[in-house]
Structures are given as structure tokens and as C-alpha cells.
Length: 349
Image (cartoon, rainbow, N blue to C red; front, side, top):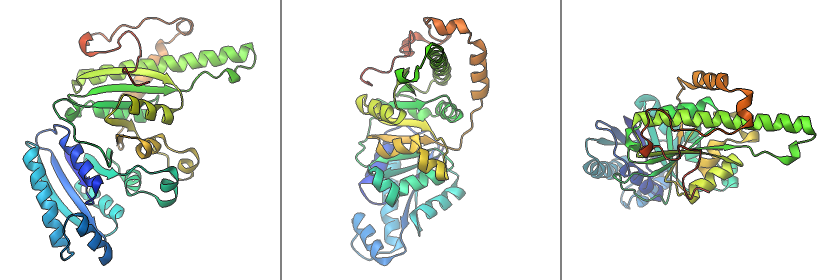
């Protein structure tokens, strides 16, 4: 596994290092610590001060500091190689260019919590990197503490009926560094609005559509939960569906649980569509209290087949009555919490 961790010498850098120290990375993992020096001399002085070096501002001095951090990190993380590299230029362009040659499996960077106005008008290095990266990307909140790798963490996986959610789940199955964690699959569905029911026929159609969509996502959650369970990369797996607005509900659930990490697939909106409609993944990564991992650059191998199979098995009679669901066959019930229904973890809502 190859990881890029971007550091800028601020509190966000400490949070990024805390994230790296919070998990047992696979043996042979290569972590590359990078820092980008701005071209302007005045800014270089500020950067050196942030790293605790008020002497001459040059690449050599920054490299020494970064190499010291890499050595300390390597002593703590077993069977992991850590190296450092200093780049020069625009932070976003330099990191994206480096990623094109390094080909990372994961990119990690820190970020402070921004308001909607900050993000819209001023932009954010982390958000620009998120847009430009073609691999899974982690945004660590500036005040994120170090977790005990042996105790694991609470990981909220926000999913919907989409190919990018399926791709995120399929990617998660192979992430052995999450092995000790409690993974909760959460889907947020649009509530059944009374205002939409104008007339008996319209109400009936709306109700059938609502229950059909609910049944489909619950079946997908069962399928994805089974898939993750078979990978053995989680201490516990739960799943649940909740009615509400996706961004508000996910943020509220993550805060209440509390989640240490939110994982979700990237919707991939660009240009005008992104400005007008917004992006759930971008909104979550900007406003969440905890670290957010956006799975990008992955394609689902099973989504279309699984979805078609589920739809083929759904009949009209199933929409009229709720049937108790048993845990997926072959899955240990002791590790499949909530097998009698789709109930989010206690405290989520």
C-alpha cells in the first residue's frame, strides 16, 4: 500500500500524523510525507516558523525537519516504510503532480472546518485536492486525536443506491487497516411526504415507489454487509436506513454516535452541476466533525449484477407487507448486529 501524507507544519499536520498512527497499516506499506514550499520568500519564513525553525529559510532545513518526522513515525509504525520529500510551488499543483508519478493508494491531508462562504469564495487546498485526485482521499479534521489501533474506531459508511457507493464498499473489503473497527452502513432515504399525496391514485403510486426504493436499498445493505463480513476486515458490522436529508442526517448521525471516520463514494459532479446541485461528499468533508474518507477512482464489479438480481426478485406482494429478515447465510450472528432489521448503531439518532 502506498500513502501520501501532505503536511504544512500546522495543527492540521499533527492531526494527519495522528490519523496515520491510529491504524495498523499492512506490512510493506510505504508512506511518503510531503511538504510544499511556496515560491515567495516571505511565506517560506512563515512556514519555517511553523516547523519551529526560525533560521535561514531553505529547502535543506525543511527537509531535515520532515525527515526527522518520518524517522519518528517509522519507529512507531511497524513494518512500514516512511520517507519524506519537499516540493516547491503551488501546493495543489505540486501535490497532484507528485501523485501522478507516485501512484498512491491513499492520500491524506489535514483541514480546518470551513463555513459555506469560506469554501465558496476562498476555496480550500484540501477541497481542490479532493476534486483533482483520482484515488481514495482522506481529509483529517485539525483537532482529530490519535486513536488506539488495537481498539479500532467507529466508521460510518454513508451509502445510497449508486455505483459509487458500491465501489466504496468493495474497496473497503480489502482495507485490513480497519480490521478492529465497528463499521456501520447507513443509507438516508427521502421521507414519505404527505404533501405529495394528491388523490388516492397518486398516494398509492407514491407509497409503492417509496416502499420499493426502501426495499431495494435494504437489500443492497444486506448484500454489502455480507460482502464486508466475508472480508473479515471489521470487528462488528451494522446497517440501517433512516429517512431525512442526506447531508444533515449523515452529519448528525456521525456526531451523535460518535464516528471517528466517515467513508463515502464520490458522486463525481463537476462544473455547473456541482455549483447548482452541490455534492454530498464535498459537503460532508467540509462540515463533518470527524475525519472523512472519500473513495474515488474505483469502479464497482458487482453493483449492476446485484441490483438487477434484487429487482428481479421483488414482487408486488412484497411491497404490501414487511417480512422479517434473517441474517445472511453463513455469516456468524455474533458479528452481524441488527440482523433482524435495519437499525443504526445505538446513539446514532
